[in-house]
Structure formats: structure tokens, C-alpha cells
Image 1 (cartoon, rainbow, N blue to C red):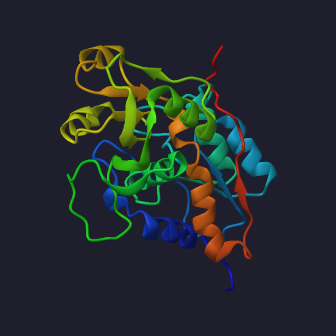
Image 2 (image 1 turned 60 degrees about the horizontal axis):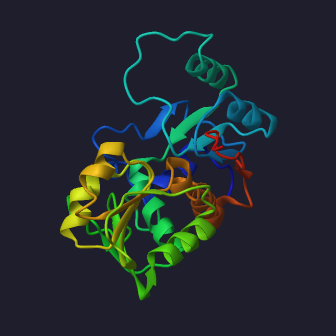
Length: 266
């Protein structure tokens, strides 16, 4: 392989998780930058920050792939003193392209939800909802259902969950479920899938964020567990690096951001 261009890196990501798979509200894809530039290095992170931009500059990376987009809606002004403004201006000044692989990566079988299912130890993985019929074998959708070969007691399951996902805490409702075998999951903010989880008659639905009243309103219907937004998506960085390493590791540096969760627990 000769020169590697930013567009080559992006094409590999989109072959794995096409942009057509992103949700309507999302803004995955190229946020800013010139895809025709030769890629000097790729920096992969979960969330963009000014520190991430600085790290990319120090590492001579002119492409940053984040999971969460920095822009969801149109902006009317760019304040150079704001966090967003500093990120945009510094990226432009240093000719760094910003790319987000968000809900398209969530919806991939080997993306956010597939990784979460594997980490937990689920088998027989299938889509939680079938809103989008896709023939691509890497399609999973916005959530997943799986099962354990043998059921676990609830307390045993929560201990297992905290260990394999390195969770500081689990927040859950008071649904009268004591055995866990069938599990529904959704990385990030998955409350919109609660009705699908109830309909699927799983023992528990796990996601990154659940509103207080959603926990209360469903405590007779299903066991709900909130594990944290960051915690539910933290492993996608390694998957993106793995996807790119198969093709580019000998040609451009691929750097994984190892920053911890910026939201702290006490």
C-alpha cells in the first residue's frame, strides 16, 4: 500500500457501519476536514475535548475518530472562548479532520451493543427491535437480546456485571425479579427501547441512562438497570482500532485514547 488518505480510513469505517444505519437525530460522519489529505495518524476517542485535540497534535494525528459527534444541531455562531469553539478552531488551524461513528456503530452487530453482549457473556444474540430490515450480516439494530446458558441470581448477576464492565455502580428498579437468564441491552441512552424489552419478556433491560420516572413506572413490568453512559460504550474505541488495524497498522499510526470517564462518582 502506498499513501493512506483520510478518505481511506473513513471508507473502512463506513464499510463496517454504513452511515445509512445512523438514527434520524444523529450527525455521524465527517464533521470537518479535508478527506483528500494524506493521513499522518488516526486518534480514536469516545468524546471530543480540547485535550483530545492537543493529544492528537502531539501524536501527529490529522484525523480524530470519536464515537459521539461534537455537533448534533446546526450552530449559529462560533465563540472562540467556548469549549466547542476552541475545539473547532484548533482543529481547523492544525488541519485536523473530525469524524464521528455514533449510532451507525451502535447498530452494528460487532459495534457497541454486540461488544456489550460479548463482555457480559450472552449467547444467541439477536435484535431487540426490528425497525430496520437489513440484509447486511453486520446489522444488529439499536439494542440486542441474549441469554445465559444458565440463569444467575440477581445479586450474582450484578456482581458479575460490575466486574466485567468495571462499573462503579448499578442503579436499578424494584421489579420482583430474582433470576436472570434472558437479557436485553442498549449502550448509551436506551430508555426508548423499554417497551420492546417488556414485549420480549426478558428478565432485565440494561442501558447507559434511564430517567427516574422510567425506573418507577416500570417496576411492575421489568427489571431495569442503569450502568452509565460512558461505561456502556467504553469498549467501542478498541473495536474501531481493531477494524483499522487489519488494514492500516503498518502504514499509519493508530492511537487509542485511554482517558478515563470525565464524569466522576463519589
